Image (tube, rainbow, N blue to C red; front, side):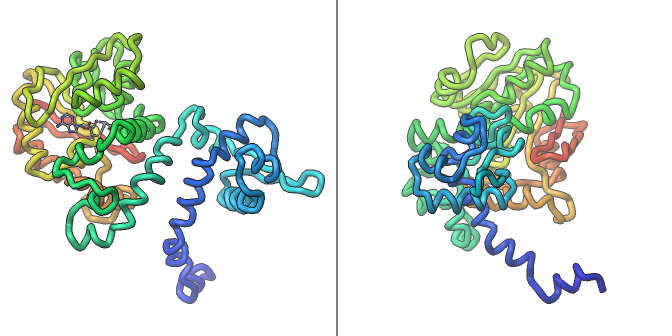
Length: 348
Ligand SMILES: C[S@@+](CC[C@H](N)C(=O)[O-])C[C@H]1O[C@@H](n2cnc3c(N)ncnc32)[C@H](O)[C@@H]1O
């Protein structure tokens, strides 16, 4: 018997790690919220805990412990300098954890900390009741999912930043999972902040992309995310359940169907099929579950997150294929990207 197996049998390392996993998330959230990574980036030299505490107006003791834990998590490097520890960002932290990082996940971390973490407090209730926990977590009683999510302009902007942020690390893979060159008129249904639309216009310079979203989201997107210089991106204000969809060669539905029940998803796909140009298609972008239930763990956890926060679920490729076929689509192709989000292309 190998040492590792023996260790696993007599010492529950994995269970202990899982039990305390939230300590890691909260350490990351606190360091981001307090601006630890931004402060170290701006300093352009390693800083002691006292210097960080002074810069962030935090307690020395608390800061020492936080920096030490971040070093243990390999989010900071620590060196000895004149008998004291000094800290600097790792390459990973500079790139992903600072607000100005090339592929910043700062807004995703903020939303996880301020919203998702609070909803997950009620995960047990969500499983028991089979429904989202917005009312308990935030006192919001709206039956309309996006009315609850967008309970104030501030919350809507935070959500849009969350949606925008992950595409800093995943958009190229999903947009190039299939060759979309033949589709000249693209509508991104529920296109939100326009991050995928922007990537589409970069990868497919001869296509135009229209972001279709609720009027207040479109206004916020124009104001904060898509500049007037992005000439090949336009907007369409509407409700994709209530209004007609304009004709398009391709409808992108990225992280849309996972918000909704099969019934509402079918309704939306049937509408897309009716409005789609002949030979056109639909591109679904979702975190796909394996067919045999074996993973990926991220998609399995996201499905729980959908339970806690929405009316939907993550699905297997075969489940999406069933919904697409029922709506009339054919020639269904699946591309796994190896990252969080995968792509399914189907044709009319
Ligand atoms: C989970 S977000 C996905 C955003 C974006 N596709 C992405 O992946 O980053 C869902 C989007 O659908 C939009 N949405 C929700 N209900 C809608 C409706 N009835 N009509 C149009 N857009 C809607 C939301 O405003 C939001 O932008």
